[in-house]
Image 1 (cartoon, rainbow, N blue to C red):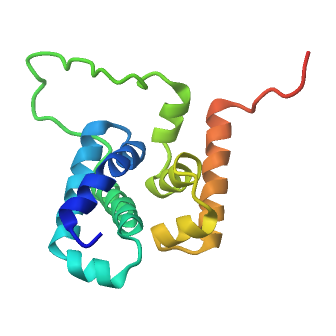
Image 2 (cartoon, rainbow, N blue to C red):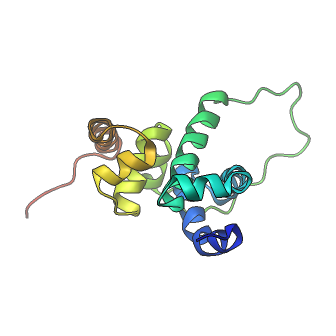
Length: 161
């Protein structure tokens, strides 16, 4: 894919899905994808020459950007005054879904590992390459994330009766 516009046309749907899984909502996902594509577009020729897979490069950049944003942001927003009108609820179909809520509660790196593993169906080696970490880090982050999810959701019931 020598042409950046062609790359965006082909990769955008998958990057938006990946971004949605990382951020937890489609609006933040679109912002994340746009930010990363702006950076990639400015250095497109260098990226094409330096990497064999610009989609993997974009995914890694998205994961890193998301983790950086998460670290910089505060978990609460302080207001000087109460708003005049109450906030209207969002139309998020996964708002009360226990698995989705538990996934949203994971740290960004752990969530990225689970999304790449179970949603994108990547191997540990591929995840390590995308995130720029070792396979051992991928394994430990996946293990911690799964333990957290099990704790929040409860252990599955096995067997009959």
